[in-house]
Image (tube, rainbow, N blue to C red; front, side, top):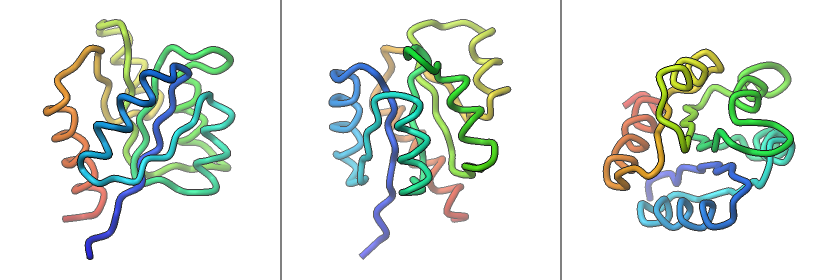
Length: 128
């Protein structure tokens, strides 16, 4: 049986967490949820997900700071990171890439394209 990819979804909004985990569940991924940056870092270190989806707007620690922290020691995340934002600005895109994200998506987005992007990122992560 093929390996089940683990995806960590980080968002302080329950509805977003539920929605994204449902979408990812359609493709058979194992979804791990975190409600804030601190929780996300701990979860990442315990479970080493294959891909991470982060919301930009979160209290305590925003998505850019979290992304940076995931990419640095002690976490040293190597898997793809996708950021989600309510805004659609070039500046935010630049921030996301500078923080170490692989991609940033503006909400609302096309779920089909989003799922395709995740498959692509996981495919390249697996070296296929």
